[in-house]
Image (cartoon, rainbow, N blue to C red; front, top):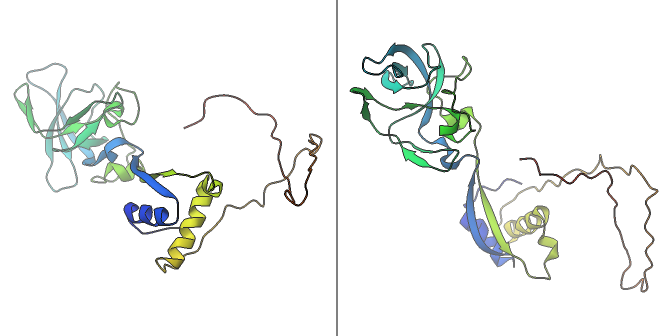
Length: 235
């Protein structure tokens, strides 16, 4: 079920349905979503006249005119496709620090952006050098598309004891589906997860259950799971 509604509106509908939304938080797979970071191509790379460890590069950002960027990475070279943080970009590094890219002078040479390393983008911990992208990456493409970043909204719902049916994503989606049909008159289709591949591997772990009052408890079901490993959850 895909819903094209603002998160606040969805929150109002859920609250009206009895699932009180206590907060809505925006989730980003990478903080800041790398807004302002684009793919650039290093056209030239020359030694900085006033610093042994710096290079002066000319970088094509796909905007018609190349920009000069001073870079201290040891692996920067002409012909590379690289992620470039343009002027005004706010980067959120892996260690939690954030900083804004400004036009400046480095050892007397103007620099209009920054060619980024993995940790400077918040994509990892490596700082051995700048990230070098595949050669077929298109110049000017926003980094959010290159790295397939995404944002989402997380709803915090205060459940009352009588709403155990909404203690799952599917339960909340079912209520939202009904509310959209009745309250908003929005026609949608709800697709539930398929269970066609589910099958019982082992039937020897039966647990006997004695139901004292079959009228009060007409059906009792359970499942046993084997071969579990207690370890850190994957990302």
